[in-house]
Image (cartoon, rainbow, N blue to C red; front, top):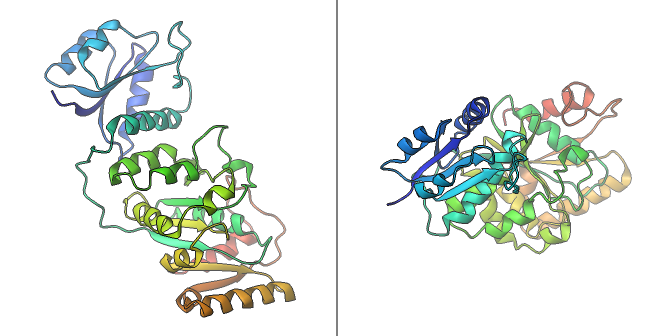
Length: 329
């Protein structure tokens, strides 16, 4: 019997079952429908005539009879019960549990899995932020712009930095990052989407994929793969805007910039910055990328008294300045 694309939560803890079900049902991109049971007899009835993809249970609620129901995978959450030790913890944020489930599901689906969903007709607007000038608030500018754009739609932030300098964007040790995701760029579209969604994290409503631990990992990825990656992300239908916090680590950087709908080039009002910017534009012209210059907006950050935290309030001179640059984006 083929497995039905359903996930059943079986937990005698009624409150946990209810809250986790409500959370999963609120995630529109999931590959399965979600239901919950708090009694084994009800679980058995639900499974008659259908074979769920996943039964999610806990150590305290686990019953050996579950294994005979034929589910594609039985995931037992570690709730501290003896014998239930596992990688997926019960008492953790719901988004962490979901990431683990999507990762497990992506491993099980194989390359022959396909979704009922068709490609989205909506393409996210791609915003590139890059500057040859150093220490000009590029990451702060990128993240705060992302948060401002949340008023217009869902936003994804991607950092291509060599080392992430913001603690707020650093995930727990061992978490998968952008470099890990690129291993799946040539997988079937729906398998890639599952891998992608299992890695997404959020800060103050702004989604992001943790940046690579080493920028050297990113510098080895061919430019054509970056184009494939960005096309997949922008046509997935999850986002209205995708912000790229770019560096020279990206091979085929000019080609990536050409893909962007708008580019913000940060600079400073000093001789060295002006020379760097002039040399950068000369290179673009030399390699026939003058169109990148045409859709670039130069931004010179004014003096600021206070730089907002990435997850804090959105006020101050810097936020006001960024807001003025958005225009009709």
